Image (tube, rainbow, N blue to C red; front, side, top):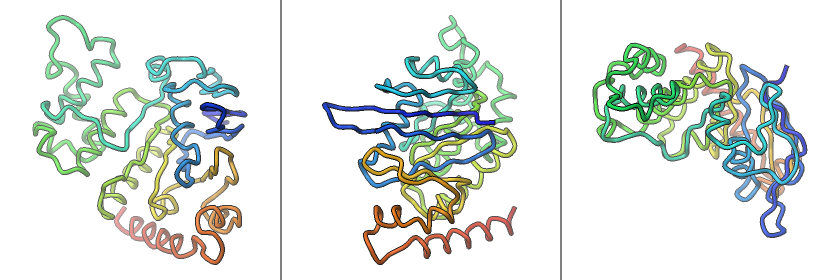
Length: 267
């Protein structure tokens, strides 16, 4: 059964159809990559799912509940988390305090009088950091962390709301290849352990082919293909959109297979 059902979703800006009647589904325990060239409609789709933009038409159902017309905070409360292309943490707080702030928000106590983040559910925050491999750095300021570690903290912050669905916007942007693979392997493990769903956009095709269970491809606001990575690799429309004629995803897919094998050996 699908956790997320998007049906005939559409959004226009000044007469230009940024998203034009797209439909797709996402099951719990699945990583779905949303890819396409610049201007394809990926960000617009993302922003409609989490309530930053209101769809002009169509439906977005999460566990049977309509999301269109709801505010981002309401959608977050229903179990939709999000990470951003540029990681968002409080640099002045420690790693664990950042997660405690998220737990305060989840518990409706963020603005309680005299309540400090450091006093709230430290053990639960440490358990979340342990899941992302950051417990040993819990009391360090976020300002001194390497960028890859900041992204891990951001993931722990997103987990504080126990999301059913996690939206990840360019999760590996600005990261070195080793960091990219480490973060996505961690994300895949969290999906398995928690039974949540992940919808992510990504420009690094090696990451997409290595970690996505399925892919949907947009071009000029329309969905032109969806399926498993190998099906997308060989899809003529997708190859044309990305490369024109004469080039394919084959080498990228081969590289992704090698990454998967390496991750499997170290799991």
